[in-house]
Length: 379
Ligand code: T4K
View (cartoon, rainbow, N blue to C red):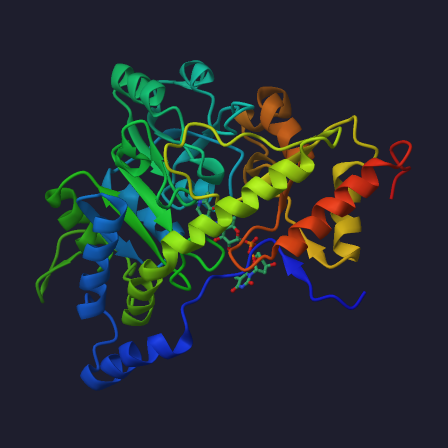
């Protein structure tokens, strides 16, 4: 097998020569971090691009999540999705909060709002839903529950860069929303993240929290953390904004090609993107059902033999990791939909530089395996 490996994603980067002037400026003025000029410029430009008024840049999405929970002083129990990257629940543990896992909706793969109320106890203080794969959560239903029970809502919007639902940016919902600009995301600053804030006062509080809690030179008002984005990431972010629309447009073509080429393959489901008015095509999950001759893990391994490295996002469920599996809400019988989806999912490669020929090669293999007579024995 001599072909170049294809990974689930490949970071999008601007032309290197375009970055040099930015680096020269950093070298010239020697401001590397702590709200430097590129940080402030990028913060504003990003808010404008996303159609938001207030956001605070962070060093990564995980520290942003931890800080968002701190900012709202969330304690006790928080209802969240088991079907996500482990950072979602880890941000709760880092705040001494107990996660309470609630099952997902099979269509959106997001928290199922009809199952949230049954999980609320006197200790519940908030809901931490995830816009999984960039599919918007049912924000209206979640807001109604939160209002009825006086709960805060922090959205993990790590996958939801640029996504708009029925009322504009999906990131406007909840008390706070968190973004990730990790290398593997639709929009990257190498590492990076942000908290979307409802108003200037909240942003000011969060700006302080990400800078150790400092106000001025000698006063510390909170036990803050170091969550600041540095100048290199911010400069890169400014450049990345110039290319993001073209990148998402290319992702859209790849998404459409996969759907068309896999439509007639029995046992392979391409979940429809649900509820986006504007989509970002962040991931391309497929579900491998019992009608397909090979089990999910067998396909995953066979594709790897051909240099195609899909990923089983999100298997195992967060609730199956050692620090969570003892929780009552982590039992698989409490999470039947998430458990089944996690057993069936593979995210296929999707990124702007993936060629049409590569997509055809991947779908061709999946069509070939579909010809096999029956599920192969354990392999
Ligand atoms: N909430 C949610 C819902 C999230 O999905 C995430 C992160 C977070 C919160 C936390 O945000 P951050 O703190 O990360 O900002 C990756 C990412 O590390 C992680 O950011 C992401 N979610 C998660 C879904 O995926 P891995 O362990 O799969 O990454 P890795 O290194 O195996 O990368 C996958 C493939 O991407 C590689 O096989 C090759 C390619 N790749 C990766 C990197 C890092 C590159 O080509 N270049 C690169 O630099 O977790």
